[in-house]
Image (cartoon, rainbow, N blue to C red):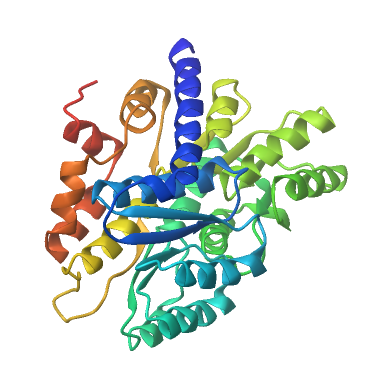
Amino acid sequence: MKKRIIAIIAACAMLVTAFAGIASAEEAGEGFKVGYNYFGAGSYALLSLANNSDYAIAHMGDTPMGTNDNFQIEQIIADVENMCNAGCDGILIWLPVPDLYPTVAEICSKYEVPFVFNDKVPDPEMHKSFCENPFYVGSIGPANAVYGEAIADYAIEQGYKTVLVATATIGDPTDTPRLEAFRAKFEAAGGEILDVLNCENIDDATTKIENSLIVNEPDFIYGTGSDFGIAAVNALNNAEEDIPVVTSGLDKQALDYEAQGKIQMINGDFWVCGYYAAVLLEAYLHGNQLKDADGNVPYIDDVAPFEVPADKYALYEEVFLNATPYSQEETVALVNGTYDDFVNALYSYSIDERAAAHGITE
């Protein structure tokens, strides 16, 4: 427990670093200016994603420019245009509404600014249509189906039969695939989803979970993202109920709740897509555009998650909370390397692989 509490303190420090990196973006680097948006400043997950992009850009001697969307979807479009007008040489875009991908692509094309879809990616058909756009550099996202399947496996192993699911708005590129994969596996094993709550944020999710618990008695609650797992714990505290919670996303608060026994299981990838998306864009800007053997820009939607069990928590703390997962030397090598180097790094990524790269042993 002591190790976990120490890790939470370290996580808080890491979050402060994320804020500092975003706030001082204009001061870092002297080469290209690379923009990225983050949905809002109140989410550890979103800031961790942004921080991973920030340090990758800075590792290349370039200037990161972070833009806060203030949790307003409509502001994302304005912020993309503002980054283009501010002279960004490239942009990393996090966009939770699939219908707006073409709008963003059109804006970047208008300003002739290369762009990468970061963490939330278009569907394969939309990706194919973007491949005709010379400014489209690729898309990098997590293996969302794997997240959902792993949660279902865990629930089945525990013998759980009924669940309340708190998730993002309908069609969200990250949470919807997680929910669909979870549903398929859980229901195939005889499980029942009592209610699916589509939520805007933690506060909205907390209220909706509280209301659903009035009429439902699930064996457990699944938050498809860490914000929704946190909301589940908050709702249960308010309702004075004791129901197991599982979630995806290695959020500081979620890990804190896990240490307190309020969340049973968490999986995630430490929002590393923010790093890989930045490496992809940096390679393009530095004259080494990464394409596969057929000349296609990368479309990767299966960056795998890992679990952090108690016996690996100290290792997780040292590798991910007390340092950046990738060093400057590794970043420079990936930016200047081959497509195969890039995908090999991406698909070998894990807590153990990163620990070995840092020369850390358990």
